[in-house]
Length: 152
Image (cartoon, rainbow, N blue to C red; front, side):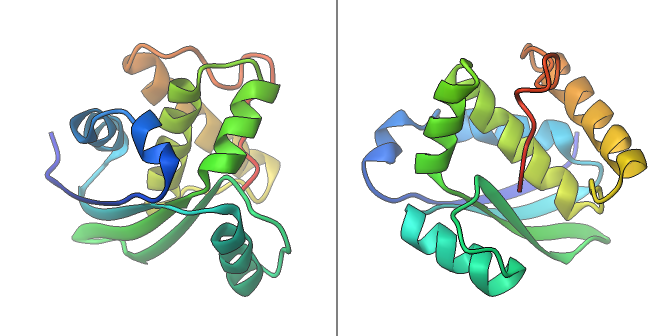
């Protein structure tokens, strides 16, 4: 098992809906291929939109953003999650909020390790890895009906 240093930055009422820190750490650790140091920051839609605009030139709040700083020998990254978008998507996709949050954290950790989905081949590899990790944690395949796609 890989070592993990995890910092959580929580904001607002969503804090009461988050699983325990140890649960989120277990999900993140399951996706780690090396030791890692992550800050997971939960932001409101305004901050999420500002970050997405500043770093990706997209003027909307997205579900997850990953800022990776180092991949070896220790993976270091910030993962930013917008709970308002997360909740909306979970409702639209008719999946439990917990499942969707686990998927987004795993998705962000994989991005921090160099996985991407810019083309079909990369997407296939990344989605297969996400599915493998999610199922190993007891979650269903997030792509089983293609509704669960992550659009970061």
